[in-house]
Length: 168
Image 1 (spheres, rainbow, N blue to C red):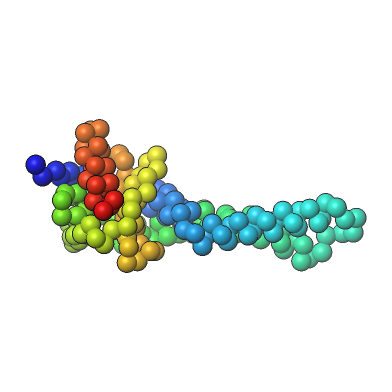
Image 2: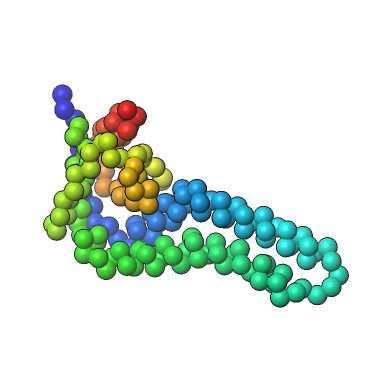
């Protein structure tokens, strides 16, 4: 028996912002950068709190830089990219995912793409979304809101298809 599941949704700006934020936090380079900044922030806070002289401009910059960078990475950049995505009619159109033994077919009224299983890397899950990551371009993902499932059976079929093909 061939299994398949068809899912439809209309992406919104919040979808893009949340999934971009989620994707950015999955990237190793961003995690390393944020870890470095947290350590640097801790060192600066410690050095400022243990000395009696006034704060230097260098210390002030290092005190402000990590929180501002984190706000940029987690708030400003995803919001900006989400706004740009909504201005792109290919990304903002009603979307249909057909998941079957061949792969994942993602279609809109403007175009359609078949992503064969060999081109897909893994599925990242969150409370509200599934992110499908690619092998060839590590900076690319497609998302599927969990609200697009009409039943738990559809979601179970989707997960079974994904895990059985991506585990190979």
